[in-house]
Length: 584
Image (tube, rainbow, N blue to C red; front, side, top):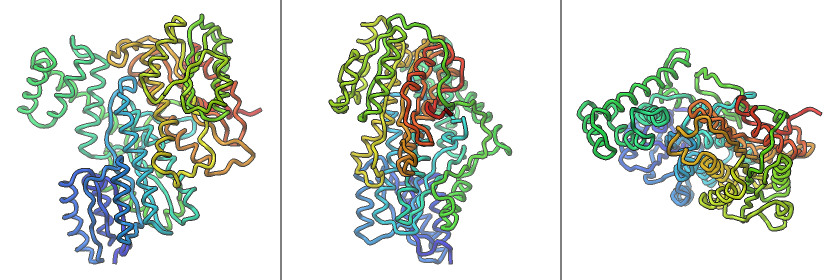
C-alpha cells in the first residue's frame, strides 16, 4: 500500500508540465487526485494517464477532473470547491502550481493589464484557491505552494528577474503568503510550506520565456534601422516559428515583412538573432548550475512529494525550501536607513506624492515627504486617493493637493502632467501605501477584501511607478533609447512592520506578504533601468518599521527622497531601505 493511500491531493495547473508530474507521483503512491486547468483536452489526456497509474498502484485511488477552471477566476474556483464540499470530499493535500509566463518585457514597457493579469493568476489565484480549499481540508492537511528561485531573499540581497516584474513580485508575495498561512492556520492543524525551484526543462522556458527575453534585448538594443516598436511587432510574429523548421520560419519572415515593413531577409536575420540570444541566455543560466543541467519536472515533483510527508511538513511549517541549485550572483540591494548626504536644490520642480494610505501613519509619512521636498526648494503636490478618509486628509491639505481615483492610470498621468506644467518639470514621484489594516485575517477575507489589499499594496504602487517613469521619460516605454542617461526618482513607501514591544506574529506575517511583493519589484525594475536601459533613474523602496517593533520615524522616509534626488542613488546598488532598522 502506498503511503498516500486513502488521501486526496488537489493540484492546480495539472493538465501538463510540473503539475501533471506531481499528480503522477501522487497517484503512484496511492492518492486520489483532483486535477484542474483551463483547457479540457490536456486534462482528459492527463486523466487517462493518471487512471492507469492509479489502477497499477492498486490502492483504490480515483481521478477527478475540473476543466475550465482558471485560478484567476474566483467564480470557477469557488464553484469547484462548492461541488467538492457538497459531495462530502476531503482534500488532504493542496498543491498551488498553476502559473503562466506573463509579460517578458521591461517594467517601463509592461501594460497595466498584463501586470495585473500575472498577479491575478500567480498571487491571487494561490490565495483564493488556498482560502477556498479550507472548506474541504481538515486537521493534518498540507498546503504546498510552488514559487520561483528568482524571488528568493537572503540577508542584504533580493534576487531580481529581468523583464519579469509582475511575475517575480507575485512570486515574492507567495513566499510570504505561505508563511502567513502557516501562522493563521496553526489552530486548524493545517500546515503551509513552499518551495522555489530554479529553471526547469519545459516548453514554457525554451519556447516562451527565453525567446521573449531575447526579443526584449533586441527591442532595447536595436536591430538595423528598425524602431523598437517595429522590432517588438516583428518578434510577436516571428517567435512562434522558433523551432518549427525552415518552412515555418520562412513563412513567419514573409508575414512580418508584410505587416511591419522591410524585406523578408531582414526578418529572417532578426529571427536568427533572437534564437542566438535565447540560446546564450540558456547557456549562461546553465553555467551557474554545478552540473549545468536544469531541473527536470520529475525532480520538482520529487521535492513537492517530500514536502507532503506529514512529519517533515510539520517540522518546516511556514518555510520556503530552496530547490534551485543555481549559483546566481546578486548585488546587495537591501540596506538599513538611506545614507544622509548633500542634496542639491530642486529649483521649484515638483515632487508628486500619491497617497493611497488609509491610516494616520501613512498620511504622516506623505506629509514628511512633502515637507522635505519643499525644504529642498521643490513644490510638493499631493494626489490623494478618493478612498483616504476625509479626517486623514487635513494634514495633507497644507500642500498643493487633489483628490483622485488612483485606480485609474489616466488619472495619475493627468495629475503628473499638470504638476509638471505647473512647476516646470517633475523631480520625483512617491507612492505611499500606508499600513496593512490590523486584525485583517487573510483566511477570513472575501474576494473583494483580498483584491482591495492587492490593489492598495501592489498594483496601485506599480501603476504609479509606471506612470511616473513615463512622465519623466515621455515615450520611454515605446522607445527605450530615451532612457539612456535620463534621470529621475521614483519611491514606493511600502507597508510598515507593526510596532510595539512584541508585535503579533500574524500581523507581521501579513505585512510581509506585501513587503515581499515590493522587494523583487524594486530589485527587478532597477536592474532593468541600470543594466539594460542605461538610465540614471532609480525606483527606490522604503520599508518603515523594524523587527524590534520600533515606531516608524517618518523623517527617515524623507531621507530616502534626499538620497533618490542625489547623485548617490544612481551609483549605488542599494535600492531597498529598511528605514527604521538602525541602532540608537
